[in-house]
Image (cartoon, rainbow, N blue to C red):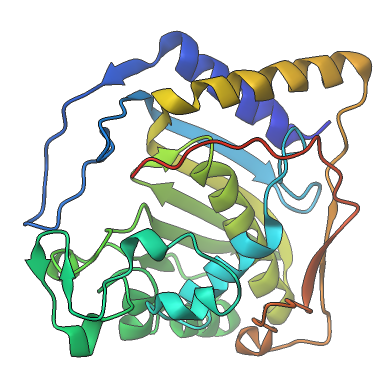
Length: 303
């Protein structure tokens, strides 16, 4: 079994047993606002506030084995943000990834009831995620500081910039990460304003675990602790059936002793520059070794 599965299933159970059902929402930012607790199709969420998960990346790579998580898709998306520093959805589409298609601003610039400048924003998600990283050179500055001033306590990457929220197709869910090196180990604290627990949360944890390991590799550090904090951990009501199926298969496999162990993360040791890691569809410089799981569970995306 994996420590991630143990924490994750416990969180899912607590949301289902003690979570609050939310139908109304507030706190919009301009005409492009998107509800956080109610999907556009009216699906409600069941939520718990301020949930924390922690992992020792040196002892175990955190990826669920009670269901399949699309590792390559997760890693390519995080490279799209922090390595390619792009907001262009076509970058992902060229690699067979369509998770951002729903938020792609069309060529005519008409999206979510407003007019966007098509020359600047067509085929993008606006001023969000990789756009922010590029504007402030967040990745470059982080790596430079880690190498030259590892005791620095100001290594904060914020994707939440108020000035650019009105022109973001979707304001960043995982919006903040804080980094430090202690005893030669690279640690990262990640903050999410909102986590779709069945779909987004497993993805995000794999992403930041991999990102931490990749950066640690190029600066000559060991991967350390990953702490993931979410302000709003929720399950959409139309995902409850899938989550109950995952809980049931986890409990059966745990009882039978058939829940697969965590896999190992391999990172090409010859790469000494984060920006030289292969970000093609092949993702040849990063892979999971021995990833066995109990299979995929289809659950709807509510946005």
